[in-house]
Image (cartoon, rainbow, N blue to C red; front, top):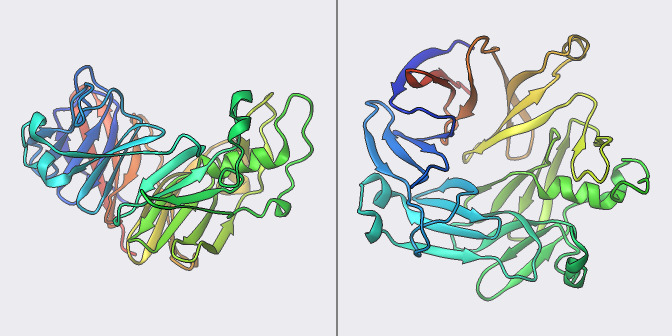
Length: 331
């Protein structure tokens, strides 16, 4: 792939870049706020994303960021999402006048990752019990791996076939097999297509599966790595012999794009040179295309995929500011 310099922005830092249409969202935990949005083409700063504070339209801390259609989702912590109208932020509405809707997960559900559906429901992964005092929460919901809930209903689903994995017996200083598998699934990413379909990645693996939200069934699954223990005592993280993992995942109505890092061939492994590539699947998880990403030697930053899945950018941090280098994805 050939990247060309796109634009440089008056941004000093190493926060998260999200490209959504003609807007660059630069997200970071600042002293007084959580970053800002910019005109992607001109570099003009449009507005602060949100301010720090305890009001309903403020956040104490920022644990995650996502854009779903016309909404901006700010994760105050693992259990709380504050949703803002995108137009209010981009239009620079005064911070105090912005409205935010708040979703907090019920205390009895052991949520790890979650996202908000366009219809207002929440789709979330369920983690294993982590502490002794949580054992009393091991109800029928938390025995499952995925949950959909709203103000009226909570519906759990099982998406993991535990007996299809072989991660080895646990020693006295390791968590049991099923808990390790469930932690790996729980810590993965979630992307959605409307209110009907979702795709989940598995943390620290090149594994993903699609999920029909209406029926609660796993539709398809792809496993390119073999889950293993990482050798650390009481570790909640798995690994694999190619050190492959999905770093970013983006979707549109046709495709699922996974930015994968690791040893992509046996030669890479022998040379101990991890590489990055974008793997494209359709919603049946049939492979469509692969884009090998160049090694950005001498540059500090990372690759990100635009929300429309049409482009990939390298976000380079430097003394002059943030520079975006762009390449089109012709899928």
